[in-house]
Length: 146
Image 1 (cartoon, rainbow, N blue to C red):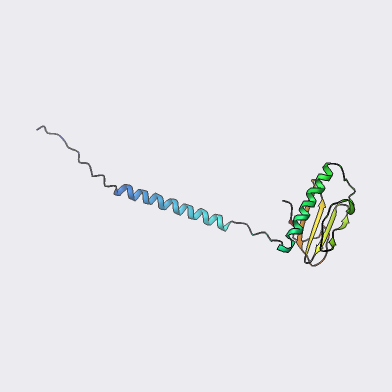
Image 2 (cartoon, one colour):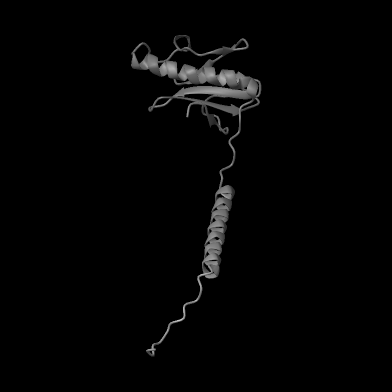
């Protein structure tokens, strides 16, 4: 027999591959959990909600803003704006009042709704309030038509 060097090869039992696979899986899980915890901790503060009994009024106010914008595009209304010319909703025998040429408000219970005209268009907002206020009151206003 010829004299040759025989290389001995270790059996492929998969022990090293299994360990490497489990290490990669553990690294992926740790990375995913840490990213999810970062996302969860960075979530913004929840927005305040309007009470359910006023959601119908909020929808009517948002729809009124869209109607007014359509009426302006059709040139059926224009400045100076008068309360009687604008399709504002009434709610439980309360109606909007005109504060100035571009500001209209409705006080309902502990909430005030305002619709105002800016250079860019019409905006509707609501805020908790103990009394009727105008569009320029320093309250924490929340938009209705985003």
